[in-house]
Image (cartoon, rainbow, N blue to C red; front, side, top):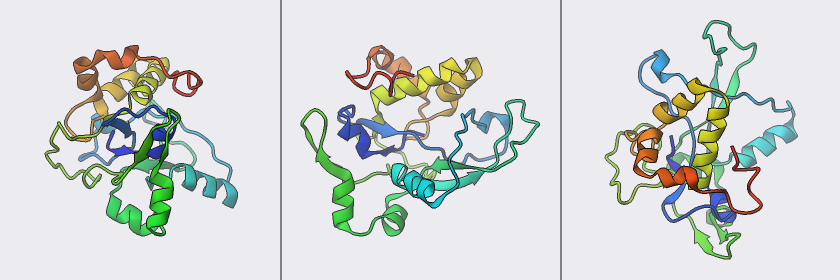
Length: 203
């Protein structure tokens, strides 16, 4: 779900107007293979320092515990994993933001392009499967450089992973798939990352 903006896209100068959304997961109704996601797992050291670093890096997300399965869907991984899930600004501000100064410090500044930015809202609508009929003319859209990176990274894992991103990942309206978005604007996949960010957003 591309349902929230994050300041790092503005800081790095890759946000472009409404094209500033990052990716999170969101619980789907039902329990079927069509709702499953293909993901990569990363090991994080088990220490207070590592936990604090993870919290700071993924500050705007709601953390949920998930049980990964192998791609065959039979053998479970030995440990549960932490996933970065969608949230809403009310709970996020209440649980993670100290005060307005903390908010301004995180969500305003000057980008790598020398442009000032100020984010007043992180999560689009309530960020928890509201089904709100978001006005497409106002809806936040995926950050172009990041979306291209996500699609290329999934493609490198095979057809199933790429299909998962294209067809099981949605824009903030929770209706438009990534595939549909790219069909409307194929230029996203032709746009190269800015100089200096080739490895970070190169897929």
